[in-house]
Length: 260
Image (cartoon, rainbow, N blue to C red; front, side):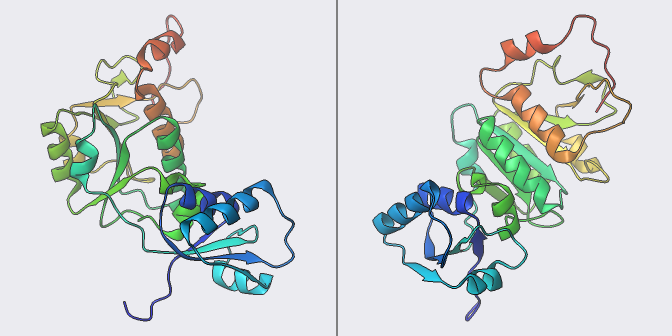
């Protein structure tokens, strides 16, 4: 929209990862009087090489633009986040994707992006409605992962799951009431898609129908479920490329944990 202010990405690590990933930025602002650091020095070097203007401004200007976000004296005025087509994610060799059905908390999405990067997942798929989008808050929480993990935004999640299945992915839905646990599933390896439901209601009925299998994360504690970001992270690490032999050894003999 004409005259609309560009999105603000705040924090040293997110801004550095933005530059490392070759993403565009209109300007980078550094707060006057902040102590130098290795990260800030690298931000300066990379901004200079990329031709991104860098300005030293009063801290009050940084605080005005960053709002309540912990900016650490560094912000980038960025271009709009660019989503990746689902077809691009599916075109890779043996893809591993995370599908989110109704996740609304930006902290959960940011954390899941960090975990997706750590587990070597190919990307994350979100619906265009009723799910948090990749906002400035998500990019901040992701600590740079939003700049390196591709995110596809689709209009119809169930159709996207069908497309993924047609491309050869096994679709596993996380369900605390599932009979099988993820450690025992023969499908928990790439090419694979993991589906995580919303924070309060879990997966929708149509989403569940598109899953090849429902699996739970076994627990020994008394609580019935895990936080969405934690459950998604565990599932991704269980399914990450080359992890199956290690996962099999993690499961104690005679394990009878509760579902998650």
